[in-house]
Length: 308
Ligand SMILES: Nc1ncnc2c1ncn2[C@@H]1O[C@H](COP(=O)(O)OP(=O)(O)O)[C@@H](O)[C@H]1O
Ligand SMILES: [Mg+2]
Image 1 (tube, rainbow, N blue to C red):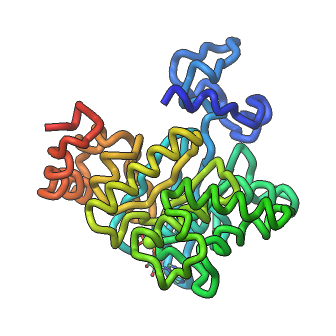
Image 2 (cartoon, helix red, strand yellow; image 1 turned 90 degrees about the horizontal axis):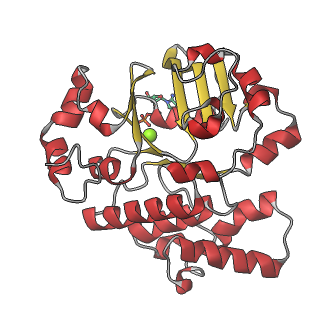
């Protein structure tokens, strides 16, 4: 976690706190009045919030899916987003990246309110995140390499040689063999399709990676390998990862914190250890049911306080 601080925040603290509109006094006691808050000593200081959602309302017709939702995503963390099927996890992701309009609320990304961006600033922001959609969503008529090059062609002005090299690099980073580059999606196994989608999400060297159920449909070994890959990439590239998952093993293996969605809100956010003490019936069933106990008991669990 401490390594995240070396991934130099790009926004300046004064600018950012003015955007946040909250007095420093709202933060825990270590910041005294008159004392300049030193964000480098406070891992959860304002400037370490990469995505800040407040009072978000999203709906379709008469139906309200997200109902005054608040959420923070910290720089350098892997946040696991959980919730029952249909609770709005994918809608939340799409609303954050602007694919679904919101009815109310504010979304700040990299310290900037998305509603106030110029077209150019918006495009610059879009270059800083990568998305792996729930169902892979590769273009079936394009090869893996061509799929990876789609965002590069859209956002970067590169020569064909450079596009080739960069695509090969991303394909290797996602753990695919070089000969996968010229295959079409229909020729790939489930695990390879996920890796190809991940390679495309990494195309623009993002700061933030959105993963919508990245291991669903994989067998446990394939899912475990994919989790390891995500963790390794997050460590080496200093990524912030927003990961929707139903997979309890993934939560234990890669997530620093968990945010639980229910009734249109984030009803709890914190470490898995904190989730284990919750009183909410759905969360209790989720984290303390038989499948949860099996996941916790597994030796791979990286949090000693929840093992055994
Ligand atoms: N484009 C849309 N139009 C209408 N309703 C939608 C749309 N997208 C999602 N919904 C509804 O929003 C709710 C949340 O969906 P979703 O975010 O996909 O759930 P999940 O948590 O399983 O990802 C569901 O009831 C779904 O039917
Ligand atoms: Mg979904």
